[in-house]
Length: 370
Image (cartoon, rainbow, N blue to C red):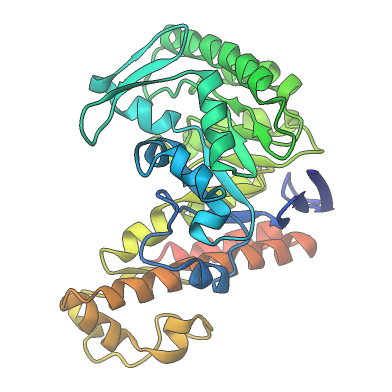
């Protein structure tokens, strides 16, 4: 029910285009996945997200587990019916959110105990019940429960976390084997130690039937260190499945990752910065709160055919943002997601023409000027 086909492999680097077929539609890679944490991409309807060009969205297991609860989602017919999104959905395990609650959780061999950030109620995620939670949510692609490290963790801590991640992966795989309509992605950890990254990948490969994820990056490290870890992994990633780096959404990180063979990305960046009045353009992000846009009657991006750019100007959107009108933030969110989808199309075209490195260099020369 899941199949990945490489369409074109770059002659310059590890970049590639492909199609990942799922029961609910094809995903054309490299792909960016807008994040709908609570079964909603903030401020936007599913129809608007689809019109932006999105083929798949991501939802968050931790947050949906707490609210509205997985039993309610299951009774609604799963996430697709609950939120009216007919295309593929990926759910993370909620592990990153749980492990960010450093003062409110405790790791054991069985799983991780944590307290809800909403009311302090104590829960436990185990590999087994996490797979059951994601089964009830009904996502097409699901993530293993892993131990998420922090930037700066010692080698000793990283090794302990990696050992537990590998043990939990085996348990996730056993628990999930009865759900053939869901593709389980193992997660490669290893911190910022090259040999531990490779060891984690080796442990994950026997379970990487449909795809593989790389976690523990974009957590505060400089871009150079991010690239260094992907350089270690790139030659060893299996060719027949998609490669997913979790939590990546800015153009610089996406370009570096694509160069190193990564196919899938997700991030809240596009909608988060929109809610502060920041819009993504070919020349970098612009702050609509800046007074220089008060009488700027041009679109957010010349040539952009998103609904925001086709009908509204910077001056109008700035007025909405300054006036705290939600419509302004929605318009920027639509634009930022649409802009990112068009950016991914340009990447695919560059790879297909064996001009990815040229595209990357030229793009960053312009984008980095802002």
